[in-house]
Amino acid sequence: MLFDVNPKVRREDLYDREGELEEILRALGLGERFITVYGVRRVGKTSLLKVALREARVPHAIIDVRRIYFEYRSVSRSYLYKELASYFTQNLSFYNRLGFKVKDFFGRLKGFHVSEFGVEVEPIPQISFTDLLERINDWCEKKGVRFVLAFDEAQYLRFSGKVRYDGVFAWCIDNLPNITIIVTGSEVGVLRDFLRVDDPKAPLFGRYMREVYVSRFTREQSIDFLVKGFRELGRNVKVEEIEEVVEIFDGIVGWLTHYGYYRAVRGMSHKVALKEVFEKGSQLELMELEKLIEPSRNRYLGILKAVAQGATSWSDIKAYLIVKTGYIDDKTFTQLLKNLVKYGYLVKENNKYRIADPIVKYLVLEKL
Ligand SMILES: Nc1ncnc2c1ncn2[C@@H]1O[C@H](COP(=O)(O)OP(=O)(O)O)[C@@H](O)[C@H]1O
Ligand SMILES: [Mg+2]
Image (cartoon, rainbow, N blue to C red; front, side, top):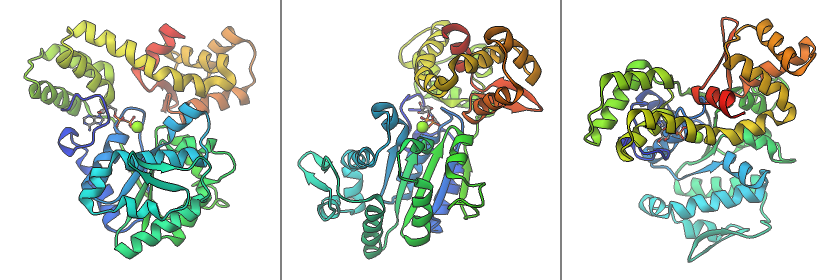
């Protein structure tokens, strides 16, 4: 169902993304070792990743780094292992179909064991991350397969304490031919900073990587997506309503999906469904936004409110901010503004700023 609000797993539930899927599959087919997937929040990165890895029929694990961070407030090795183990547990039947013997594999791996409940990690796993990768690589080499390890919302790996994952990734790319690493990120700028891809002294600098950009749907795609989604559920919806929704949600498929779900599955009217997307959607955005603006909450909020209320230029936003929160020097102000672009909350085009997501705009104006 197109309007399922969970990340899509099956290709038939994924609208379009043919080009992006093709690109990931081609990279895997060529044995490429490092793939990055960029795109704003709720544009469909996780869905693309899940569908691609199923389609590729390769052994893989997807680690939801953001979830780990928000659950535990840190991203330590043992939490990563726990997530890895639970991914295998949840996908046992997929691995069986592939002929990947999960029991056999983890049975030999220090720190992990397989019980009747699935794959489990010992409380203090003895195996280092690089050792683990090496073991996976060896195992794959014997079987003649490739393992794909995906870090979803990988920018949160920066909260991992002392392990430098950019270094680990570079090492893996150089030494482990049977492993492909995929990283996705909503905060494109933050992820690129974290990977230090533009820093000549950093381990990943200058390395070949496949970069896949997941963009917003065009107006035509958004309309077609809604029409197909409603048709699939046997619902007829007025053209004017569809156009209004497409206008509001600006190509972000996540919000279109929520609207479709409220409308066609929950049976709400157009107005109520729209309101629900804003209410529920802003709740979904709140926690992450709060976390990111925490270091300078009043000023960040001041900037977001200024832009939400229509200020677009550097100087107008600054003037608004000074009225709200007092004096700020140019350098600090510019830095905060840049950070909001990096985090993906603001978009800068032709030297004008706007809020990237209508739900965030609503959140900023109505709830904060
Ligand atoms: N191409 C697509 N076709 C149908 N639904 C999609 C598509 N991409 C994303 N969705 C839906 O949009 C929502 C957000 O998708 P998700 O993959 O979680 O985005 P992201 O990982 O970029 O935040 C989910 O409800 C998902 O089912
Ligand atoms: Mg995601």
